[in-house]
Image (cartoon, rainbow, N blue to C red; front, side):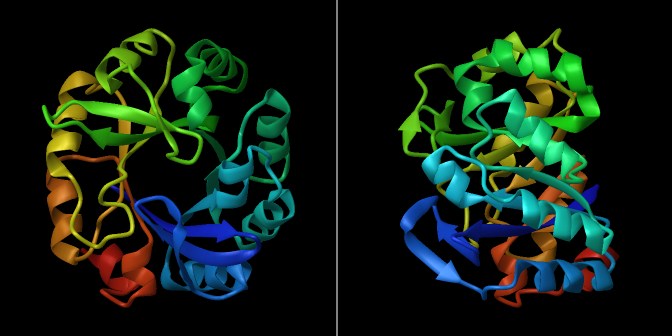
Length: 241
């Protein structure tokens, strides 16, 4: 299981949102490159970078930051505001190893399927941020979690079945940034629906036991954000377990 320490950037500052709410922002400084250097020194190989400004406004603007963080020696997967092939080109040309596609992966699967064919499965990841309905069904959200799809995630995944999608992130937005533990049932369901995919857990991790539980569920990766910034455990401890 790969650990992806996360840096969310909003208007140049390192932040975390509670449940994706742009009115519920906690700031952790204004030097994301310094944070990336700390993660590298702690032993990280990858970093998950989210352009929250891009997700909010629909326009990427963090290429220079991607370039700087890649220069630290970390492999970077990054998304937020990716709306066009030009955005993907800019991300990868800036040194990112993987472009993460959010809203468009929900609203226009065929375009993303074309990108997978063009760039290869290792360079494209889909990010499915979901809300869980009362009946337990997961529905994807769009546009920085401000809108909800009427198509269940399970149905959407069927469109990608023969498309070569290999890497995907899944976030229960009700848990993101809340330090209440990950939604293990969601990841168990996804592993049953698409056992061939490399699933990354995102949202809610608050303890080393959470990481152990995700590893036991055979997740390919886990994204850790607020728990690191709040000192619940160190990245060294997370990597060790």
